[in-house]
Length: 115
Length: 115
Image (cartoon, rainbow over all chains, first blue to last red; front, side):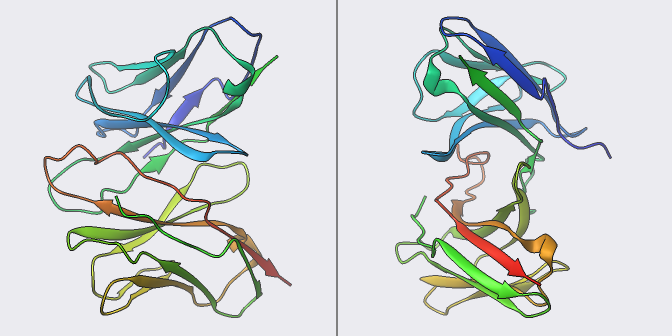
């Protein structure tokens, strides 16, 4: 079974621009979560989507948004980029069923650099 | 979710057991202890989880104290490839709740396995 894929893997943008990152979950997984990882703040939860609905949201400004499509693929968007948005953005998918490990499977991440 | 405390770094000799401690003194009765690790430049990887009984899988063993206020992840025969950041996470898996996809990462323990 293919793992979580994220595109693009690397991205360079300038301040003020916007960016869209894509995540394809493992086949059959309906929950997709996004995380931001920076050296200073570590791994921080952005939001989670399940069945095209945002179920949970972390403490990030409204410039960070996301959506999920009917095939469970997800995108996140960051508008008006700031230098501090430079980070590794990780996507994770999960098979949300009663019981089980609720294991999160992470993708390789998208490395965003804002100049 | 309860907060966890881990030592910032540990060393281990290759072939020896690596014992990584985690303190979660404010854990509540329905919260699970999860361990993930992140090898450099990759997404985090699930290792093991447990509620109150000790658990073992092909990767590691998890020992949870009787009062559940602390736990230890054991890698029985550490290899160089086990060098990574290890995260201890406490999660509430209440079915129907909103925290399925949310993992609250701390700073983790940097485990370095030496030849």
